Image (cartoon, rainbow, N blue to C red; front, side, top):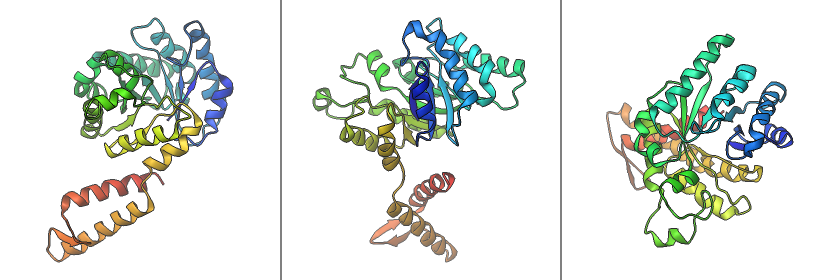
Length: 295
């Protein structure tokens, strides 16, 4: 998912033509306060006139604790709701926050006669959001993804951090991963409710090694993808979150071997000196489902 400021039409055009799997036009953090109202028209214009191909088309509203959020929804969705796949909601602290946004979306959809329901992606980026994760995830069937927001989360937790999503000297002090608990909770909750789990952005867009490390950590923790703030980050994220040819071949071989054993009435089998049981098969089939579903 590539973020792009709603105040920059030129950058939105480039994002629409990028290799990202989704584009999120941002009305929140990427836009100065005095530019927010006027930038809504840029979002509408982009969704109505640009070709995004097969990308997920999303826009991020401002937080519900600001005077901008309700107008973001009304002005953009009324004018371009039939072209929007997803609304991204920042700073979801409580389930009632989600229900408010969904109720307003439902009223707009009914008033405008939209036939397709707009999805919702929810950002978990506060202590409250972490504590209420399960209730947030089940607050509405509109929710399609849970997204970890490391910057604001660190602020609410009073964690010293230099830049969003980056590791610094503080990570060498703490014997572990400071965001492990919330990241694991986001993935576990997403899996429990059939949602996508997306890791937040990495601010150092020129730091390829750091982006690779952060992406690899997110992938091994089970995240489906990562947000990007610059087009140059997209190839790195694609490479790391896409299963390698070797991984896919191994998964297919494991499933085939297990299926043959099952026909013979056997459960656990051995392959390459390692035991394979149904837990291995579930992991292999989950990987193949992602690969086959992306085609």
